[in-house]
Image (cartoon, rainbow, N blue to C red):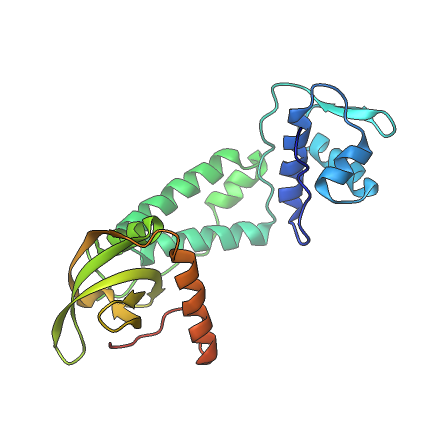
Length: 248
């Protein structure tokens, strides 16, 4: 038996349209509007509007109210639809990532930009290419080599990391940490992590990490919990959720 995919409150319209397409793909025969409304968690009137919107974007949906709808084979996804301001915000963000983060994220931003260009409406491609908003270069002291890449991988895989760290007083120490989050600021990057030496959360400036290597130990299943606890700690201290400069 198929499980209903009831949309959550606040689901974006674009997400709902994709969900509607997925539901239609599951069925070989016409599906009534009432069934579609139930599975997406919206009103029947909204389903009629969504069907019309998908048809206008090229989806070959046959049928009509009171009979049912079926999606003909061969349709993949409609072109991405963005307003002018949304395109500007999107491209500016990608350009900021490209120029102000590490090489791994920079290359990823370029890949994302090319993928978005490939699925934009034809009339929006030229506008996307000619967006007149640019991000300035990062400051010269933010180069941390491959440290950020190593830490991002460790966060993703919930893997402990061993670092050699020199604090503001020039004291060198070796730490075994559980990396939680990385903040990208102008001129520097900060790692938030659970430090096993201090048995507490600590922040580390990436350019002060002279050596960084992944451990054979993991903290599987704890990454999300640690991140939430770190956020709670920041809220209790009255600061925002981004890591702030701190010398452990």
